[in-house]
Image 1 (cartoon, rainbow, N blue to C red):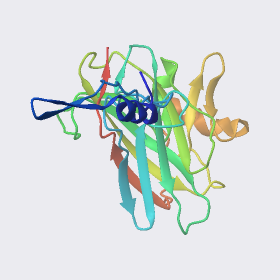
Image 2 (tube, rainbow, N blue to C red):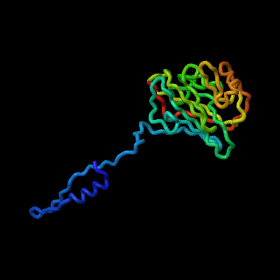
Image 3 (cartoon, rainbow, N blue to C red):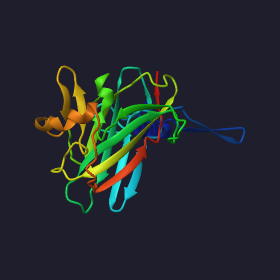
Image 4 (cartoon, helix red, strand yellow):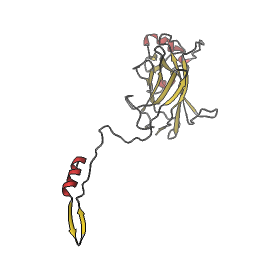
Length: 233
């Protein structure tokens, strides 16, 4: 196929005019044009969106990402056992640096949580990634204090059905971590580990019992649900 500029030239040179029985006939040659696609082009399987929630001058976001967390996911379908990249963030605006944390996350077969909803716990007990005890799920190392990356292993819960992820997020002062404001995941042959400073992993000891609140107020919080449901097959 010819590039567009060459095609225009070919059409100009190939056009011929002849007169037959008083009728003017314009003869041209057909030229196929190849416009090409960028190397990183791909058809969107769905329209990627981030769920956003605003509270005061804080805005929380949550969405599905691609494998290396550099952009939106290309699909909402995941093979059983694969890792589902989920990113949450908070826009800090006029605030001093804030630390974003997941307080609770559950999977559900309904877009809104109801008493009759079938639930699968992912994060409980004020920041404990309980799913990591039975899977490869983990928090990824932070790039920014205002972002949190979760690699969630695709589970058997509601296999083949639409699954919604519901999470409660909090923004917190980075220097005030305690057993109710933390991000903990379980490492095989090691135990519970604090994401932001493993030296203080004792803050995660309550993950197997009950992490009681000290009734300290967070800077802000938000309850978010992934807009696009997941499908694990």
